Amino acid sequence: MSTFERVVKILAEYDVETDALTPETTFESIGLDSLAIVEILMNCEDEFGVEIELEENPKTIGEFVALLDSIVD
Amino acid sequence: MERRVVITGLGAVSPVGNTVQESWDSLKTGRSGIGMLTKFDATDFKVSVAAEVKGLDLSLYLEKPEIRKNDLYTQYAIVAAIQAVADSGIEGRIDPERFGVYVGSGIGGISTTIENEHKLLEGGPRKVSPFMVPMMISNMAAGVVSIKCNARGPVLPVVTACATSTTAIGEAYRAIRHGYADGIIAGGSEAATMPLAVAGFSSCMALSKNPDPVTACRPFDQNRDGFVIGEGGVVLIVEELEHAKARGAHIYCELKGYGNTSDAYHITAPDPEAGGISRAIRMAMEQAGALPEEGLYINAHGTSTHLNDKTESIAFKMALGEAAYRCPISSTKSMTGHMLGAAGAMEALVCAKALEDGIIPPTIGYSEPDPDCDLDYVPNQARIFDGKWALSTSLGFGGHNGALVFRKYEEA
Image (cartoon, rainbow over all chains, first blue to last red):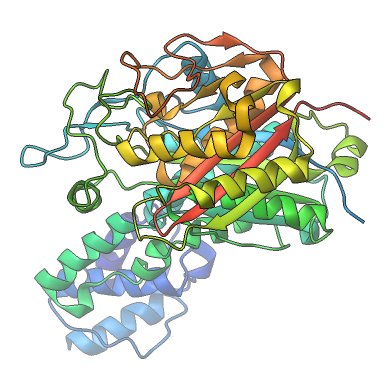
């Protein structure tokens, strides 16, 4: 499963309609604020087995995925 | 110029019902919301009963993300506010900048605090939720209600323990009376039926150890031994009279007096001489110009603790003199349990409905008179009431006292 697909799976737990999500989708457009992004990153720590320091401020799912990939690699 | 203030909307989620109608039907028929404590395993506790909110369908009021991101105490406040705003028809009929929120909580999001304490201990600081602080702080119910109802005027989340929502409604009354707002969503909410809070109240000897849900809370009875913990959210729409009339609002009653005093005596015990609460009653009665001879119903704080009920009985006699003996007094906590920060608003709601419907709900579970409590407590049976006035009293840990006086609404 790609990082994008794994993130979409986590987003599904946030009552987000996942069918139409693309890397360009902004968090704002799916009703997730900066606090929710922090919480989702925390859940990704468990999913990906890494520790993430949130200094970035990803606006889109694509940016979020890129951030994760840079840490996992 | 001092303006007149009326109640134009009611909302309630309580141990006796998840709407105003259901709650009022329970209270006037003497139906209790007290049962065995089910929210957690209380095996090791001295306390085994509680007045829990039952069968509330939050999805009728809130989207799933709102449920996830708000502590239960805030959820109760939102539900009550949505009901009250709908009942009043005020939405879109008030300038948002003249629309306020005075919704308080005695304790705030204590379950959220504890859940995150567990996360901290188990997983370290990075596991603590970014929503922990906004969910836990005790002003957030007012904050979220203001967002939900687009109320951009004064917001004041009161914290005066068990007097919280009486103080909130009283301060809303003053703000409207003196022109700072035209309408205020006022009340309180509480969701502390959880192990730490119950253990804490139990340790400070406030809770009944009686395992029988029928007699555990028996205010003013000789054998009372403490209060029963309750929960819920109750909100009133407090509105300026001319504003309400101009939009053709239904007026439940007029709010005419408020008293707010401190015992300056002890952190949990009321002053046995009842100086603080009797002054609050006198202030509210005088401001209202209330005459007990015109018929005065008193909804007492009546927690069913030994000290409260005795002190309050003294206070009624100090403040009202001989007239206290002729006033019907009931404690609806005998059915709702002690809703803590929501209690005062629940009891203000009862006063509004009693004046409107002409019915006084009883003090249930009452069987053996206490010589220290020698007034008319409307035992066990509701009573017809054709008086013009209602008084609600509240006493909170910290020595906070509040009194509200309502009058049956008449044009002149």
